Figure 1 (spheres, rainbow, N blue to C red):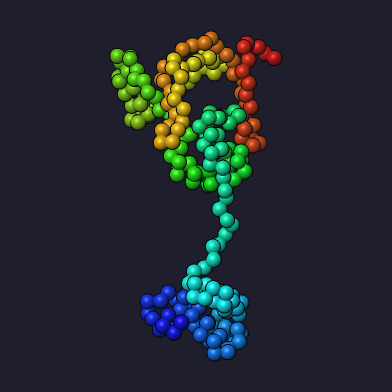
Figure 2 (tube, rainbow, N blue to C red; figure 1 turned 90 degrees about the vertical axis):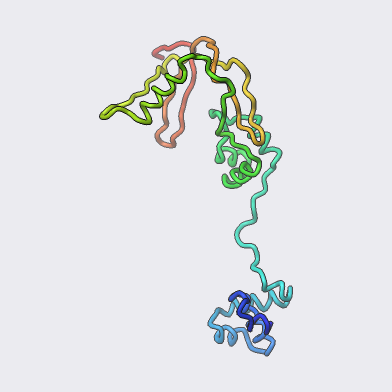
Length: 216
């Protein structure tokens, strides 16, 4: 303890704790030690007890702080992320998965990073056969990246009657180190009518599909 106190390389906190032990060994009371070192009596009592229980190891390190890390069933998390989809959504978010498994969203995010899972990403694995694809791509992207001066770019689409589309090939599911994949082209299976509304109170979207567009 004397060596720790005298050494200029000792951390300040460790030197102070060693000083508490030395002064306690001389028979000083907790309050007298606290007054001499300018610290609280509870702090003196804590480090005296730690040293009495564990010796030098008891004062070298602080005890872990905060709540213990939440445990999550990794097998269930991977199965949920790669094999299932949440209700009313195309992929899992950290908050949806956390609510399903009863843990914090940061816990889900940490395990996804460790496992290489990115459910919000997907890639196409077919190249367009349109001979003018590059020209069309440059025209559309160019409007957004470098629009003409004083120009307003609008993107419109019909939503009342929506084409029921399906991919020409089944997509490859999400797995460790690989995002979900899907073909860029599709086939049409008729049309459907989507009725949707935004609940401004909590931000949820209420929607349903009907075969016909009727006033009812």
